[in-house]
Image 1: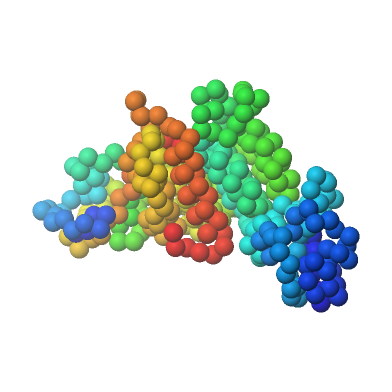
Image 2: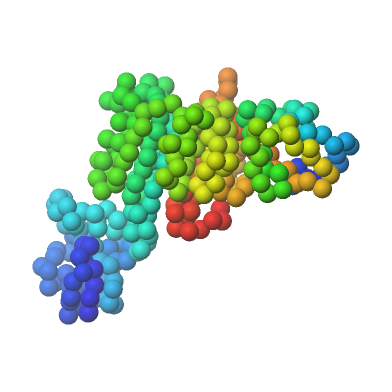
Length: 64
Length: 268
């Protein structure tokens, strides 16, 4: 699968929220697009990501 | 031929700027702006040219004043921007500077939203002055914008923005500018706009603390309707403060992306 343009191999099918947590993302500080669609956070646990998926993860740092 | 002089359509028989100035008894030390460009040179007039002549030190009439404020803009841009609406969420180092830039650019309708008042620790990067201390940021900024361009419509809301009021605050706007400090609030606003208000474009920011290279701050289009400016890594944290130059560079990126979107350009 693709994550932010980089190809990675997905060992097992996994839901989106576990994928993000396993990769040290802070769920409260990001926005996620899966195959071109923005995914509401309430759906993160229902979505199983697959090897053909393309994921764009935007994280926010503080300051303004 | 017909030309526009100080915002008014007029008919003239003059064929050049020098002739026009002579016919109007205008001295040579006045400012002449031709289709957005200030020059002392003579120029052969063509029909539909937009000419602004400013008598230095003389307060113009209200009608002439607006054409003078917009005289250095690329022709046609001002009219388009004047009819545009932009909402700015958060009036700190990013939002206050973005609001001032959009006002100077002539964006006709601004919504300014922030819950907070001006504090001394804001003055290192935010567009406020000592006289604004303890004032709500919304009022302090509204006052400044009226002093820059009195022809702009300003709405203010002194409220804390969260998921419960985002739809009500922003549904009428074509572009929302995310200008918060807190990364959780940034993410909440971006996610709510993109999922619940899918016709709105959002221009956000992430990463502008410290004094790393200016050139590490950039604008990227991340998703449909979602633009983000910053270096994407330098967050404000203990030992890494927010400083005026990089905050303003990032604010400039956001303001220019907003202007581009208002003019129909979707590439960064």
